[in-house]
Image (cartoon, rainbow, N blue to C red; front, side, top):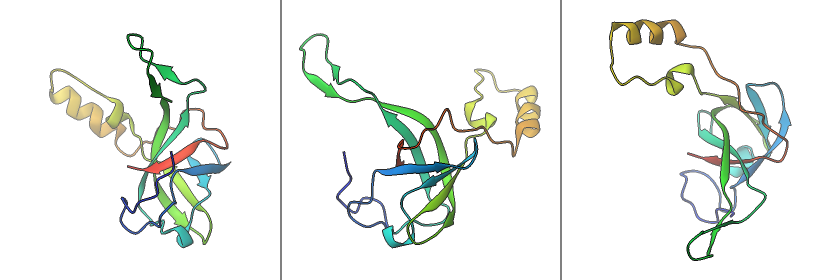
Length: 131
């Protein structure tokens, strides 16, 4: 599961997945990667945990692997040598969907602008990777 290529500009080989090392609050997490790993301020990340059981194809019985269960997304806001702070960047706007865009939609978007949603039950040890 570890990323060993330089898929993400500026990050070093073997950097990902990173792990949640500390939970500051519902909106901010400390990850175990920092400046020495090529982490950059503003970099977007996905926080997830891996399912406990291997998922099998019901038709063939073939292993499909482990499911990534998303806790949220965020941006790096502070970097130290060996760790960084990741802040949730998910807003009600990202989550809001309407089949019929209208003036009401624009009004709701304006009301919700700038409000962040927390990560969903983050745990120390959850995985983190760039998106």
